[in-house]
Length: 127
Image 1 (cartoon, rainbow, N blue to C red):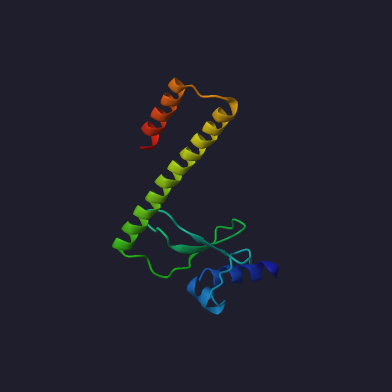
Image 2 (cartoon, rainbow, N blue to C red):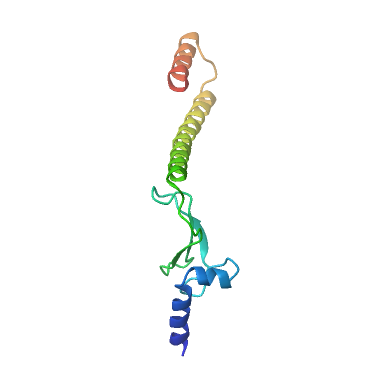
């Protein structure tokens, strides 16, 4: 009997939009758990949201009914790539700052020659 209920649930959930409309915007996966809403950042579907199972039961259904237009897709991909580039720069700057702090803590005085080298490296990397 339990197996039959599960099969009916799988068929019901597999209907996608019917499932959402009868659940006030909530999706349920094959294991009868409330599905997570996740955002896609693939080149084909950037920014598009979908339901997925929190337990890995291979449930998938689009939350956003429509795909974005070509110009929206292009702009979202460009924004995603720019965010990734800036995140990488921030990560590198954070590492450099940590290294500079460690170097500063280990050195009590800075002579003029060493100071010039530090400034040169800073300008070379950041400017």
